[in-house]
Length: 409
Picture 1: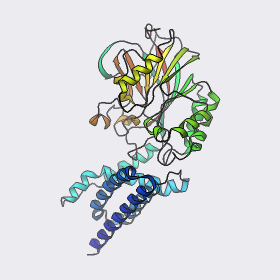
Picture 2: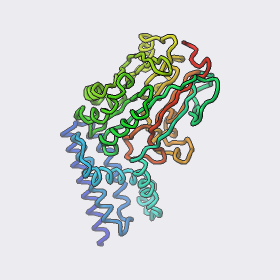
Picture 3: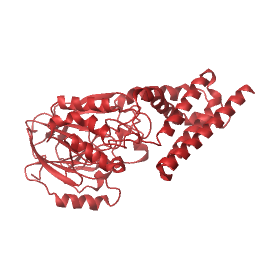
Picture 4: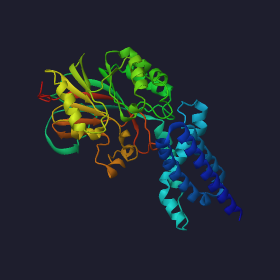
């Protein structure tokens, strides 16, 4: 009876918490956000309520984590960056718990059918690994060979982590790409500022920022992003950006912050820059929700290739690579997927969960015909609370052009 009473109280309190979050979300941010947060927190709460009878002596921790998750979502109804203590005591535990419960779905189904969910510790242990991976980055040097050898279809092409050898440009173009930093619980301003400072220390030919800078917590002002990107002012004239889908939620703040950091935002626009590796034409695409093929074709028509220049296309969404006209970019740089976010990349295998649901390129180098696409695994992440098996990326891309690799020059 005591156990049943505890279960009842937990479920009742969780339901009341869910109602409070939805009401606050609707009052402060409108019905669309209320529906989104209601479904997300509702699914989490249903799973947690199915599992609560089976957590044994960990019940107090389970209750505390459920409280943190409810408070976290309640506070998201008002965009504001939270201090370190709040992130440590609320945001990170809440993210861990929400991720663990979603990973526990098979156990919750078993519990709902009356079975004992053995091994319940497994998803919670995996979420612990995810917390570590979400707070770290993998530093790499990636050699990309632009050889323009034709391939059939859209296939993974394999970026190299070695010198491509003879027959390539004498000096590779060195690029630091920062994408999907998503300033928020896992990416405070100080952390992104350190990442930008390390980018400056590497003295690349170019820094490209391929979108999705903010989250619900950071989109109320330009100050956070401007401060985080401020080290890039040392490379003014070498820093270029394109928008991501989340940047359309707060476009003025993003544009202001990029300008203050000395980054040139290319929204369906192009720039020509001289580098130590030769001239580079950079074409920055907006994030188009509809009519992508026609819109990108119009952008390319307005900005034809510059003879003798390597042509880079900044395209946040790698799914739009299929809609880019053939031959319009020697190399396309994308983000958006966070590398698939859950997968086996940490084990040296390319598989990610994203490929189970969509055919979008998830990470690494891809080829379609003579075109090449590099999908960065992301500087941060958003959406599902944690990374798991797909480390964030902090890399220098060394772009080697093979003899005849850019035939449109």
